[in-house]
Image (tube, rainbow, N blue to C red; front, side):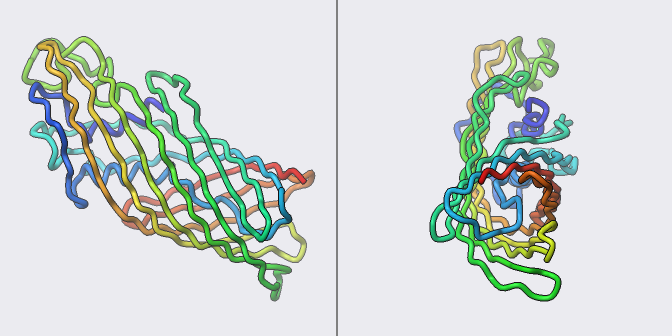
Length: 287
């Protein structure tokens, strides 16, 4: 998680003695593009084919996905800071989280995910996601015994704190005019707020062994980032970065239904304007 958060170093450039209260970069700025780019892996999208289940069906899921590497061109702050040197992001290889799905009467279902505030390296994540969906059962055709259409609303809120802009390895006590002039790492805060709507269509093969699904959606991104670095001169940089963006997304995948109510899903998730990634999930269905 700490390495994953390291990509946000570009949002604060490097800490400088002159603190700034607030910055709202434009939608085409590198700051906005980088925030949107790293919102993709944690978007709480649909993760399997829609099925009309009986009420009070419970499903446990575990999800993992790779964290892509941003193009170096957008790791260069373009609007918020005078320091404009190229940053070198450090990325974790995967992002993982648990999920819980509970079906309700009339085809409704709720989903939830929670990453508790436990220290992972130097980072303290505290993130929660939730979704509400409605599924309509449709008839079968050809090689498919059934199909379904799902409409889904989802959201992710929370925060992550840690030394994002100035990690221990970036500190220096030589040049007061250069970045990260200090002895204590920064204590920054990142809030990856987002809310979205999706439509997903899925089919089940005659054998019931495989599900296929595809969909699209729109997500409103409201990420917030706050620097928290005090230099050796005692000046604290509490610069706040605020971005409001809207993104369209596409998704598609397949599920293999295994014996004993287990299933494995592979999904491609794409935000065409930012990045395409994939996800793997394992689930256990309680009946």
